[in-house]
Length: 218
Figure 1 (tube, rainbow, N blue to C red):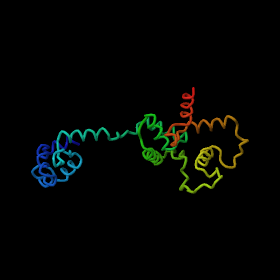
Figure 2: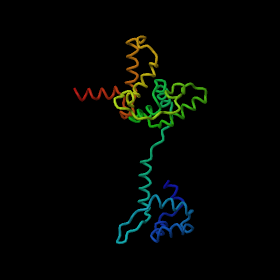
Figure 3: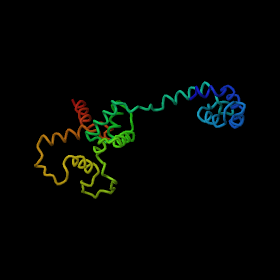
Figure 4: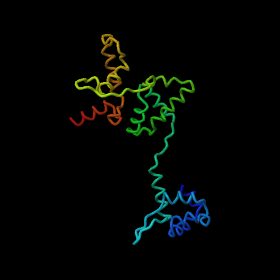
């Protein structure tokens, strides 16, 4: 951080030394007052190119401060796993969303910004405490994924078809008689799938996309 750096080093002194050359500034670290690795790190991050007849890289304290402040603004803020975030994650996992879907949907709607890896860590921690949340993971038993090329006129080999079929099979396993399903069962499954965000839609849900298209058409 610049505040700490400026307390431990004379920035004006460093500015003078860099005018004599970067290697000179690092070599004279004893005169400047800090270890040479500290000087090297500061120069690497905050040098300014001065346009003169020959041109040169120099250390300018005011510019260095601005560079540091700009980097701090661009740095993503670490969001704590608060109780509200935990509750939302638990609800979505129970509703059979993947960690990536939860993360992507939350960022899209500016609810919170937490990676899917962090969500998975939360689930593992819950498991270690005796929790059952991990049992809701959709792909907990899958160890690998086969890759292959589709044959012409074999629509069932297409990725989208297989992906959609896979989603449906979460609720209707192979071998189950469709005659056993009521209209209410079909509607429930349909609503669950259409309310789940899709990566291919930028983590919007099919319902959200459909409503947007309806508004454009009206």
